[in-house]
Amino acid sequence: MTIDTAEVLRIARLARLQIDEAEAAALAGDLGRIVDYIDQLKEVDLPDDAESLTYFDTDVHREDRSGESLDREEALRNAPESDGEAFLVPPIVDPGES
Image (cartoon, rainbow, N blue to C red; front, side, top):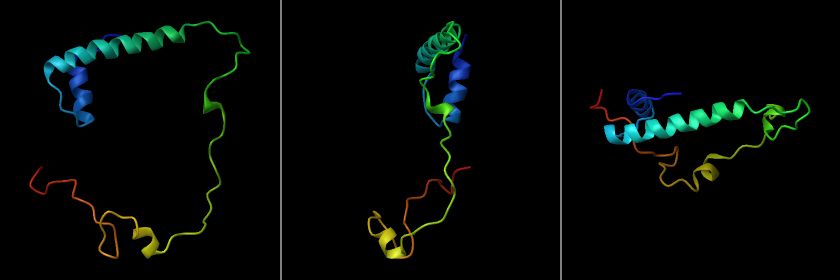
């Protein structure tokens, strides 16, 4: 599969990564080889009784049930910063940006 520089730049933008054209060109080749290898693995002929090595064949869901919860003081005890009522975190969006 051919992955071009434009596709890498699009993916980088979605992932909020800053890369230049040279990095994108190098990554395009690397990603193309990875996808080609995965396609090659799909072509391997396995017997019908081959055992799966993935955990996807098992049900990993658990029953949703309530349980013990922490009181506020205990929950905030290890917080880097709090106001006694809630966790204090730095803003992730600059109000001046759009």
